[in-house]
Amino acid sequence: MKAGFRRLTDYLGSSYWFVPTVMAIAAVLLAGGMVALDSKVGSSWMDGYVWLYASRPDGARQVLSSVGGSMITVAGTVFSVTIAAVVYASGQYGPRLLTNFMRDRGNQVTLGTFIATFLYCLLVLRTIHSADESGGYGFVPNLALLVGVLLALCSIAVLIYFIHHVPSKIHINSVIEDVGDRLLRGIDDRFPRFVGSSPDDHATTATNVPDTFRDDANASVGKQRRIVTAKDTGYIQFLDDEAVLRLASKHDLVLRLQYQPGDFVHVGRALVEVWPPEQCDDACASDLRDAFAVGSRRSALQDLRFLVDELVEIAARALSPGVNDPFTAVTCLDWLSAAMSDLAGRSLPSHLRVDDAGALRVIAHPTTFASLMDRSFGALAQYCAADMVASLRYLNALGEVSLDCDEPDRLTTIRLYADRLEELAGEALRGFNLTRVRTRTGELRTALDQPDYKRRLRDGTAWLAGTA
Image (cartoon, rainbow, N blue to C red):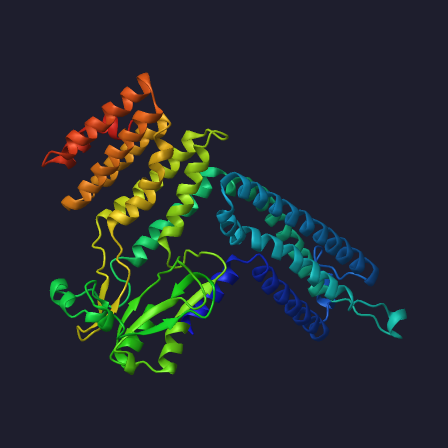
C-alpha cells in the first residue's frame, strides 16, 4: 500500500496537470463562495469608497470578459513557452531530465494561476444580470468582481515571475544544481539506514545466512527456497522497506532481494527469494509483491544511481565532439565530488539487515563506496581523458573526495581512478596537454601515499582548487 501511494505521489508531483487542476477546482469553489457572499452582503456599502464603488452590469461584464479572455490567451502562451523549454532541455541535456522540468512548481503554478483566473471570471460572469434580464431586479457580485481584479493583478505578477523563471531554470548551472541538491539530500536520507538495522557483529550475523543463500550451496540445498515473482514489467521505483522487514519478522523468514530501486524487472522474474519456503503462503507472497512499486521510468525516490547517471549524462554530452563544452562537465564533476565527499565520510549500511531482536531478516544488495565511485567517476573517465580541462578537474575532484576519506580501501579506490584516467589520457592526449595531466596525477598520487595526506592536499590548494 505504501509503495503504491509513494509512486502515486511521485507521479502527481512530476505531472504538469495536477497543480493546475487543483487550482482550477479552487477557483470554482472561490467563485461560488464569493457569489453567495455577495448575495447576502450586497454592495451598497462600496459606493462610499472611490476605489470600491459598485459596478453596473455592463461595466462588470466588460471587466470580467477582458480579464478572462486575456488570461486564457496568456495561459496558451505559457504552455507553449514551457513545452519549447522542455524540448530544448531534452535535446541539450538529455531526455531523462524531462521529469525535472515537468515537476517544476514554478511552471505548474504559473499555468494554474491563469487557468484559475479564467475559470473564476467565467463563472462569476454568468451570474451577472440587469433588471431587464431578470424581470425586475439586477444582480452584480461586486465583491466577486473585486476578487477577480485582484486575481488579474496577481496573474500579472506571476507572468513577470515566469518570464524570469524559464530562462533561469533552463540555465545549465541551475539544471545541474537541481540534480546535485537532490543527490546530496538523497545521500543524507539513505545512509546509514535502509532496510532494518545494521548488525552489531557483521561476522556473526553472516554465519546465520541460510545455507540455500550461500555461494557454495549444492543443487538440493539451493532449491530450499520460495521465489516470489514480479507481476509487472518496468523499473522498480520504490521499495517499502518497512513492510518487507515487518513481513519477514511476522512470518519468521529470511528474505533475499534480487532487485533494488532503479533496476528493470520483467514479469515472472524473481523479486524476492524466501526461506524457509513453507512459512511463506500465497498471501505473504502477494504482500511482498505489493511492497515493490514498478513504473515505466526510473525515479529518484530511492535510486541514487539515477541522479548520478543524470550528472554523468550531462557531462558526457558536454564532452562529446558535437558539443565540446568542457566547463559544463567541470560543473558536473564539482557536484559529483561534493556528493562522493559526503558519502566518503559516512558509514554505509551492511547488506545484511536485522530486526529489533537482532535476527537476520533481509539480505539486500550491498551499497559500497567503490560501486558509486565506479558509477560516477568510473563512467566519466573515458570522456574526461580526452580533454585536458576536464581531466585536470577530474583529478581535483578526486582530491576533494579524499579529504573526507579515512578508510584505506576508499583511498585505494580513489588512487585507482586517478591511475585509470592517466592511462586513458595517454591514449587520447599528446604533448603539453598530456604532460599537465601526468604531472597533476603524480601530485595527487604522491600526496595520497603520505600518512598526512589531508594536510598535504590542503596545503596544495594551488593545484587542488586551481584553474582546471
